[in-house]
Length: 467
Image (cartoon, rainbow, N blue to C red; front, side):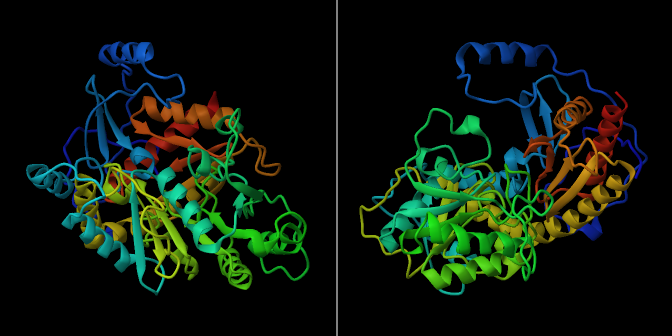
């Protein structure tokens, strides 16, 4: 692959396209942008005076508008967006079908609380039941965000089972409210000075690139090693299985480094849950809604969870979260849980339009473009030993940078420098884990945009390696 690409400001057609229909990449020319400009500086200074210091900012990017996979700052600089609002903008920026759905709903009414009914709420719940990753009927609870979905799942699991303990995973991110924070274990800064509420025992996530446990004879893969450790050590010493309500797990670990578990992990985990009457709760907040090339990432392993947490890409940027639970599990009575804004008609309208776009080629595009991107990044790894591993499914891909491929020493400074240089050349990227860069563009991204973004990334990597 060449290390540069054409940069233009053409407004793209945001309708999803199959990967095979996308045009071939053009001759590359990479330019360094003059960014941030004076308008961005002015707005960031105003922001600094009034906004909480708790927010972490990746780049001095002040957005003006976006179309599809392109975003523009207030000074007119154009970028390719390989962040998508952290996997939120599934249909890209301002997809015409989503915009029209919001306009139509805005003309009718903006809000009614969950004390009453509205049709979009029912239609969305019916659609989520249709695409749920388990065979039996689903019941849906709607909220506003991923952390609220996780909170609902925790409460439901405790209510249904009558148990109070949970199993979580090191490196996990499930949110920042106190219940979900009990499970979050990706960075100490997220937990420092906070007392968690849920009783959670954390075990290693099955990361075969950086294993924390020694495999035992007979383990089919490292996924089985982790589950065997859970059953033979944790459940026998510190967490009695009769007291464990649920196991909360990301099918692909997000903040922890975009780690894809070995194939033996989820089937063995499902087997363990069935044996001890423990609920399997899949946190699909980042991996769901077609991002991996299937509606839900857990479907890649043929396993049916008991509860699914969804948010982010479900409504293309409108605040919405939901849990989908097996009908026999969602047994709580009226008043056991609630949410004022959850299932807001504007968010439901956006979600229904989003699902339509995904059904009409978005998921297929994510699968095809994801395979292409994964192959291209693995090709780069052959040219750049600083790329220790490339992993992912569909359009959730991580490239872990290392100082040495043998020792696998994380290259944190290199990762951060590549991210900065990519930004300076017109590509938005963010990190995860210790030294991983994540590639999560809109699911409707075109092949030429994939090529452009990858070319900028390799150009930035080459510059950073030479410094």
